[in-house]
Amino acid sequence: TIAQGYHLTGLLVTPPNVTIYTSDPTIADEMPAFLDTAPINLSGAYEDFSINVELQLQDGIIVVGNQQVMVEVGIEAIQSSIQFVGVPVEIINLGRGLTVNISPDKVDVYISGPMNLLEELTADKIRVTLDLSNRSPGTYQLSPDVLLNDADLRLDSILPGTIEVVLWR
Image: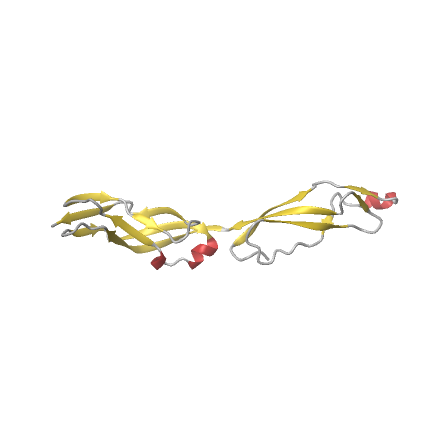
């Protein structure tokens, strides 16, 4: 079986056609339109790979040319999505001497990506920040940033999309 969280996306055989020979016309008439290959081990596979494999021929059949074909196996991660509710918003780069109030102080984060990565993801591995660099006293509507620990994860949405920030001395 393929590694958990992955699925088979395709098989490509090269060459796609082979010429066979037999001296017995009965074998040729009864032969299916395809040939099997030797089994290919997919145990634990989690990425594309290519392998040369022998053709499985019944007695009396000869392949004209190479007895092997190359099989390209396509494998990719199963994609999924997950929601984290109430992730705290972290204030960064608050100016010296300023006090801040934000509303709301928690957001919901929707993330998608490979299922195996999402299964390992916990709320404490997600960092939601509001950068207050170069902000003076006042009221702002700012969009938080979400920092994820893996480039294969994608932020689908964050709710709410903006946070009210009030700064004063």
